[in-house]
Amino acid sequence: MESLVDLAERSMLVDYGNPMEVDDDDSSLVKTTETSTRIAKALGSDEKDPSKRAQTSVTSDKLHNKQQARVTRLCYKILDSEPIQTFNKNYRQIVSDWNSLKDETRILNLASSSDPRIIRSFKIIDLVLCGRRGSTLLCRLANVHLMDLFSIVERLVSFERKSGHVVRKPHYRDASVALDIYMSAQEDRSNSSVLR
Image 1 (cartoon, one colour):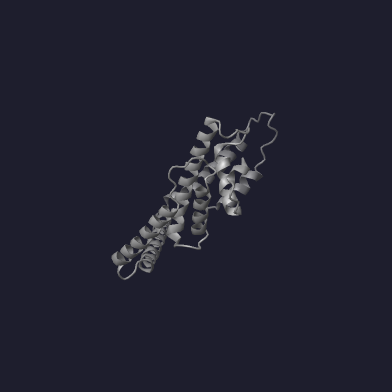
Image 2 (cartoon, helix red, strand yellow):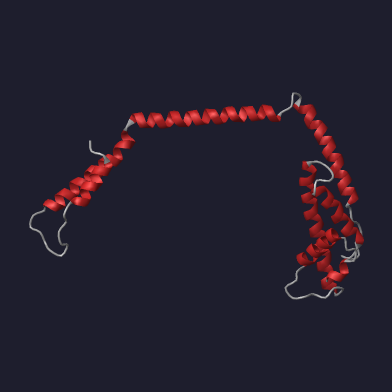
């Protein structure tokens, strides 16, 4: 059987003549049809070859087995000898850290967005996010708490704007003001009303 490359080269060498002239002899059409039939057979023969299908399934089975073995090895590395006790110990530690973070950043009865408790809460969350305090899981939970604090500050700024306490600037939304307050906490400016 001819290779696919040979068939393609042969089909390119067939002289089709001038397309505007009508040939009485259909030999070039027959040659072209035969060549395209051979190419189609050569392309289709790979799918019908059972040995190639078996090789593909064996290869995918080997790959699946390697992946399964790797997952098993990783599971044994992750799990401790006493997984339930380890989980309980980590859970107690995270819950206590999480509760202390929430207690330190709890803001009740806010009157304005320039309240220094907001800046203090942002600073405490930043300490956790920078890894200076707590574990990696607490850092992830601090991200969640940061978003909650942002939404509280945004609602507070929105209320202040609607009530007329803060003048609204064009293209400067509530989230921008909340972000400015957060940035002022990082820069250690205590008066956030200057930012608006």
